Image 1 (cartoon, one colour):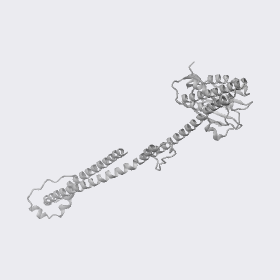
Image 2 (cartoon, rainbow, N blue to C red; image 1 turned 90 degrees about the vertical axis):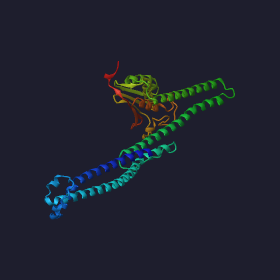
Image 3 (tube, rainbow, N blue to C red; image 1 turned 120 degrees about the vertical axis):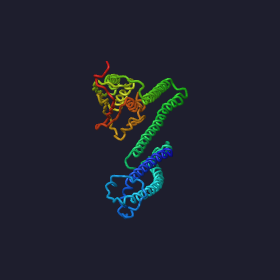
Image 4 (cartoon, rainbow, N blue to C red; image 1 turned 180 degrees about the horizontal axis):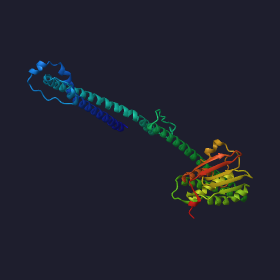
Length: 396
């Protein structure tokens, strides 16, 4: 900080001193050009002609100028006027140089001091940002610079830094919620397994109870496995895409809806698909998970006799379903890990609250975005915007 201030002060002070030297040089040249002629014109008429004619000592040459040549001077007055003007001009220029030198020294000192003060004023917001960045920790992410200054580059820098702190605070809070919820989700099946083993198998249980406990343990292990697979998939998608290929999004939607047709029939839900041929540059496996999680979520948060509408077009993918009403205030939270619009329910293959968070992560990895809105009659409409291509660009 001090080194930057020193460099700025040296730059500003040097420029001001150079400007002062240049100004004094110009003034000296202009004054020296006309000082002799001006003195001749002023002095010559006041010198008596008789005394001028008596003089015989030669005088030094008088600097010439257009103004001096146009002045009217008697011949007898010229010699004395020439001597007087030369002496007076030399004295005036000497005094001018002395005064100019002292003025330049004072001006230089004031310029350096002013440059140092101005550099400090300019760099003060940078110092505030630096000090705030050094103090940042998990306990004071709520602090902001809130620079009060006119619009400018430094004001924009401070506001950008405050915006970055807002995003970091939101990210840290989301990660903390994720860690707490993940720990809870992983601890629940372990508690169920321990209870089944310690209580259910105590006192030599009958074969029927042992079979029931075995099925319960297997079901709990399956849920734990799905949870771990969801966490791994979320981590992979958060890392971004390592390779890209052209994926027919409409074909992926058709394949996924056909795979979920049995579950839709079991739940008495009709699925409507309207898919226009489009392709997406991305990972086929991740896009398959994105579509599967969206459609599966629409089926499992529905009611018997409901519908699920899947639409694919150049603007991306949209999945709308009927079902219970969703509070609009909870919509931004649905795409966070382990966040649910309704009470906890462990449906088979649900992914323990990771379904929509995986959708959001895969969409971000493909350069897209995801959003949702509550339907007036109940249910939810989720829209995924992806960089798609028209059918003509598809590679067959």
